[in-house]
Length: 331
Image (spheres, rainbow, N blue to C red):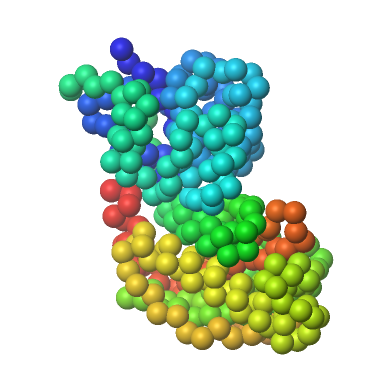
């Protein structure tokens, strides 16, 4: 009997990767949804008996989908597939009724093992059905999904070090001129001043800088979590920025390098400015960047007044190599 499967993820690359990892001889009909609201419609239509669900999505996220399925008693077995690998994320989705959790990027073995473990894998040799259109993926979408996975790795490390839960956004990816950078930054939507540091990185054919914008209102709570005294002291502020940058930038670059199968060397971090507006900080350092591919992630810590923006700025010369590397994921 053909089983209706739903893959619910805002990333076309993630949907394509998920579909490819399903057992080859599994008799299924696959439907796709790009956000939680679409996913619920598919489940209500009876086309999502088994659901592979992302957590970070627009319109309605995965947590909200799980809550709605639980409250409305909808007939769906849900396996969460996410780049957010924090232990508390696992606990929360299980409490909301998720069958299990798989971290991105997915593998065929991980999918097969879970399906067999729960007794929901039925094989009909040579009878797999593919009645949905092929997923089309562009480079921007692929970059966003790679950033999503790397973001989760960095958040997990920060969460373990501070014993907190890090709230994750949907990464923002754009190719733009440096003059457009401040307009693209979500940090500019808020009026608070920031302090910033940057750290250069380089790999085979790829180079750029990681920029950490630390909201000034975050210093007090972050210093407390780190066990530091005198949060208003200049040395304490710099220590907080440096430690946070080491965790987020290092883990994020490692997440990128693993997915692209390459290594990055990192320069020593440098403080760009303190207690200024984002516009001032970018303008004062604009000669560092020209046309760039920018990945922006806004990290927030639950129950604390802490937020910082991590921005990866790849040089224009890096884009051909990135496209080449991403091509392997798109094939």
